[in-house]
Length: 243
Image (tube, rainbow, N blue to C red):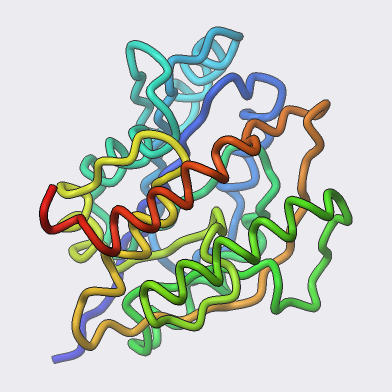
């Protein structure tokens, strides 16, 4: 019997996004999830601005919201892992809180799984006709180099390994979450390396819009995170079974 998907867990890691978090959650609440019931899990990764206060207020107004708080800032990977392990959805979607990625793209991301064609879906910023903010050339170059290096190691042909939009069948990603060890942005190459090792896993990419931010607007990733991503690609593809 074909499995029927009923609930979508949306994991939102957040750190010092007091200026945007209310708007982000409003867009997530309003987003079309193709009939799936929403479970929205927000993990506050030790924010020091007004984020915690805003989340407390929003939680009282919206019963779909589950708000969790880390005692200090551990990093995106740690926050995502906590959210994944706390989820109960048939499908799980990771949503950044900074609105670089639009919840309007949910139907595109969910459709391959709902149609039983995919186990995992990545939203690619580089195969889309949708709006794409023009920003940093060297960020683009580094993204493409990291994706290419990851593809060499995994034998996948992804166009955007570092994408913030990743969607999974729930049971699959909760099994993988127990094994995750990356606390910061190494989460992206680590989860990619792990799914690449699963026999017969069906991975799809769909084109998404991208509303990138400048550093003045709050972008947090830096060049050193790119170096650590290279190390993560090597580690999780070559040595993960020995660590």
